[in-house]
Image (tube, rainbow, N blue to C red; front, top):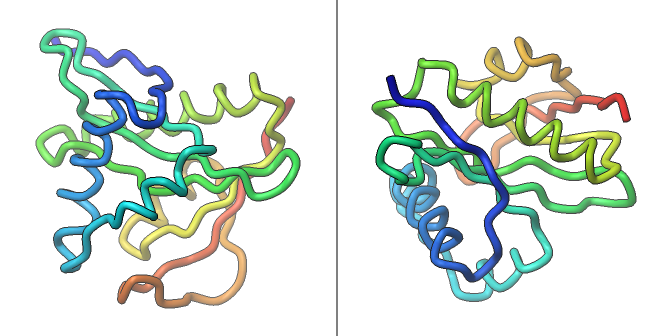
Length: 149
């Protein structure tokens, strides 16, 4: 049985570059987009969290937490290998990120969820805020969750 190990990866590290490849393949390339060097440079102050298959050691899931203001981060670029979607690993990654946030004195997570995954975040306790909007050509919803510190 495969299991995951979650941890933070350092910006610019080999594991970080793996997260960029996964995010690019799953989230950007399907939209005809790719990361620019300046976009990746801008991620230097973000927290990069990743899930690794404990059997193979391969990176299979990741997300980014970007500081918004004191005590608030934006969760973005959540990606899970397609063959592993629907197995609960995305939920485990988000739950890990919430524990990580609390340990780092973050009291709130905000995100822009693609309409197709709003239900996923609702089940995890995130609330919809405001009307739908279009971001990178796709309908999104603003969502928020207050954490217990």
